[in-house]
Image 1 (spheres, helix red, strand yellow):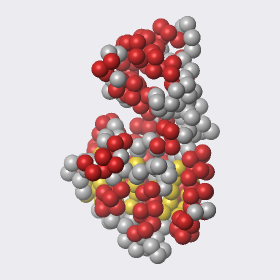
Image 2 (image 1 turned 120 degrees about the vertical axis):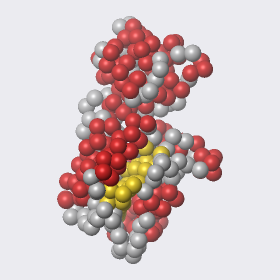
Image 3 (image 1 turned 60 degrees about the vertical axis):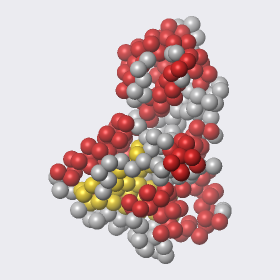
Image 4 (image 1 turned 30 degrees about the vertical axis):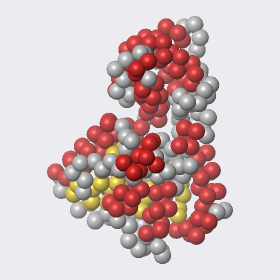
Length: 297
């Protein structure tokens, strides 16, 4: 079951009040949106954006129209799109005023466990796809592994995965793909296992993470979306971002700092908020989560 990360903290920093409107830019399985809808009733709304068409169909149409959550359906607007188009989506639905915007940049447990697109090394022999939306994205993890040159592969492993064995892994990828194309999760795990010491098994996780970020252009998308969020947010409205990668967190931190200097934002979190020990016991996947929040002034 999907457990929303830092849910209590999200509600604390978004501070939803009755009849206010919010945007959940990464709707996923709706955990955060449900918590907001509990607080902004009776007439407050949530605009939920989900890029993955399968996840959108499975967890929005079913959960919110044919379940106990039906009570919220008249206050929830759902859109299958990317938050890169945030301003356009808000204009399409004339969704204003907006009192808060949430970005939860973590990968959904559904993607890891159910999507069958090769997001997790724990899923043996899944095809290395890693696209959140195969209908809108052409590049796959297979393409990177089998077509990109050594320097390009090494760069994304080092930068996006922060992997110290990036050069060694990239060299082995180039060497082995000559004999046989790299197609599945098991193929990639075997390549990493051959060149990385057993004490550094986190290299597998970092490599998969780096490929996912590259395939979905995640860092650039965040840079494009944050300014849009500030533009559409009501004065006094709040931006809350949960990141799971140091580069994501740095982008958010710098964006907040720059706009504080310009007099557009007041930063609410001097340091990023991290999960409590109690939450980590319940949900170990939250261990790298960092929350930052700011208010538009």
